[in-house]
Image (cartoon, rainbow, N blue to C red; front, top):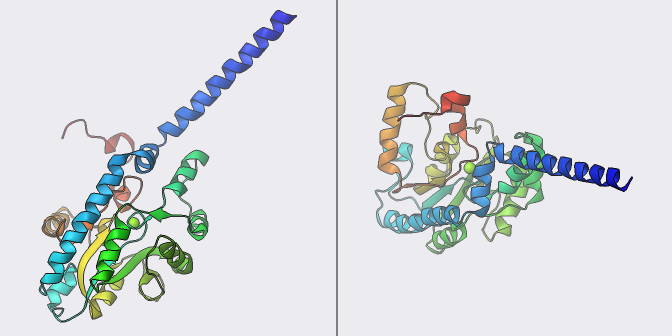
Length: 267
Ligand SMILES: [Mg+2]
């Protein structure tokens, strides 16, 4: 009898170990796992973010000294900005606020992005600061530069977003946090909101984790147009446009083929 009991206990333990190993494996096989563990654990990620904001602080000074300098393509074309007071435009998510806990929860619960759940996360006001951003914003404000946050968070999230930005030590109110659809014609494309800032300010820097935070027109599938856009990017990047890393999500995902087609075994 004792022997039968021992065998049963061992069998249950083995099944338990196998189950927890396969649950662990399932988590690690999630396509988002590496991206989120990198943000949450790798010192290298912190260094990349701090490096971006250190560059931003240097370029801010360069841009302030040159009244012919603008980071906004349409403002450059209009050439009407030399006398306007300086401003910088930052995206919010994964540029200023770290939302990796929301994605970590989704990986653990095996859920995809969901607008309602995302809105609930934002209303928790628990996002922390991306490394380097607070120091950058403080420097900009000290130099008299107006800081705008252009975000594709829903307009109903504006109060929570303002509260979260304040919580990490930044100055935020309804005038410098520009949400999606806060007015008609201010949809996903951030172009109209950048134009609104550019109307009264010289845009010294654009900072984001997605190309759409910096320019428009990258959604095209026309190769020629894309190449011409890319040429402009190489001119602005690291000088007037500062990019933060985000391997977890972004508009780039839409252009990636599915499954095996996204992998190249030769370049
Ligand atoms: Mg973002």
